[in-house]
Image 1 (spheres, one colour):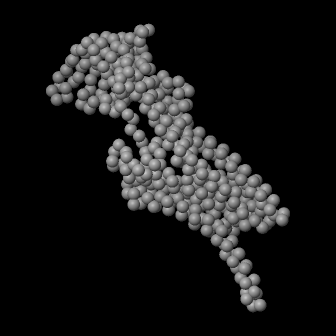
Image 2: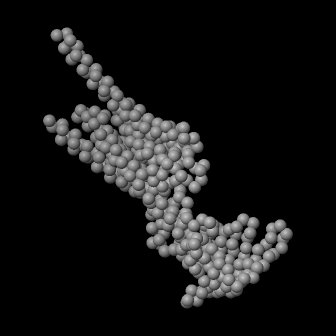
Image 3: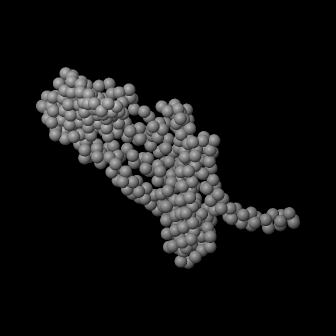
Length: 381
């Protein structure tokens, strides 16, 4: 039949436009979000002397998490735009006149939606946790270990928000001279430490500076007296973590699915959040299919208008906005009360089921009506 190759050729033609547009839109939007988010880490380059290559390596680890979030949204945008353009160019009208059903027209977009769903599972279950784990480990290493070795002569270096170090000069052998340390890490014990010289050494919690011939000045908040302690040697940790925190605590966004389903967080109160995060990772890729079906329903149904229409696309966009807002609310509620976790799955699956039925329901109904006269004739005989 001639219609076979025609349908295959049209499927490839439409899928190619959808795939190219999806890659372009998702990549462009991910880079834009990356540029905005990376501004938070510019101070690591400006104030702590990190190279631009290290900056790109650090912030580049955030890209998979951005793609995982925006992929269902961009799939809706691409399907809505490409099919709306095909309708505006009368290409959909010609395809319908050739006898293609709404399901046949939607087939390339549905295939793309399945690929988006598969990519979402790869991102949520493997790539995003691995990249976020590497990002947090890299960031922790920079802030707690590497930063201490970037002390500059004659500059007040902020190791953290509550720890500042000043070094007057540094000898070729690594000896630091004219050291001032402002340490406010311990609540109620803000201390200023002065030393003639010192040297950076590695400690159990990270780098520390060994101070020689100095004094520690601390103001007693109760009596108002200034306490001065003179020392020959004193070691000060330069790590942002406390002395008892030698291992970086894991966040739920960087652990695997098996750990989320059997949670053992550092804080027992976070167990419901970890369990809800596991179901969110499993359910969220399905929203890519649902969002694509919302776009298909708005373009492939309704009466044909020569000059197009803006009402149905606007309704589709409003529906996606409502779904995104409700998804955030449901996720927060499920994290507080795990009995509401089924709502996460309902939110991900139900819009797609409803839109798919509304898309192919009239076609199934008309096919059944078309069979009835033949059945009656057989019975009459």
